[in-house]
Image 1 (cartoon, rainbow, N blue to C red):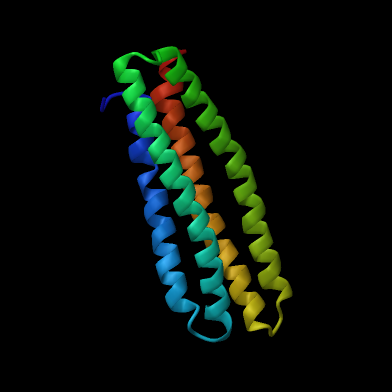
Image 2 (cartoon, rainbow, N blue to C red; image 1 turned 135 degrees about the horizontal axis):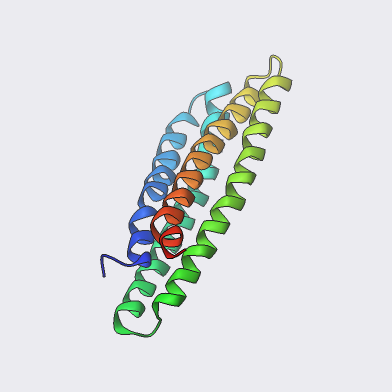
Amino acid sequence: MNNNFFSFQYHALKPLEQWGLGSVIGGAVLALLPGFWRHFGLQAIGWGAVDWLLAKAGRRQALLKAEDLVIGDIDEAEAHAAAERLRNLLLINAGLDLLYIGSGLWLLRRAGDRADRRGMGAGILVQGLFLLLFDSILAAEINRRWIAPSL
């Protein structure tokens, strides 16, 4: 079971789960502070909760699919198709991540003296940067390990 796409997916989503949980915890601490850090923390809580939930759901689904593959309920062709779907989703997400980064930069630039808006912009920027790195690296790794070898 350790050598199939779904097992890989299960392990590959762990950093997103950890980032999400860390963002929620760190954001909760920062949200207790005033101004910039409060709004930075609120962004971390929101983004982190979504990241954590998506990673948890994705890891659960991957674990179930890995078991299905081992017992023969699905075959390697279905695993390959799942790898392509995830890679494509990650590439779309990377494009969206660029929009998040741009939005964060725009908000930072337009915030002026408003610490709350600067914190919000910086929070969006940091989350977008992490997601761009995560999505891009994982898409490239899926392509290298699960899609390109079959060409």
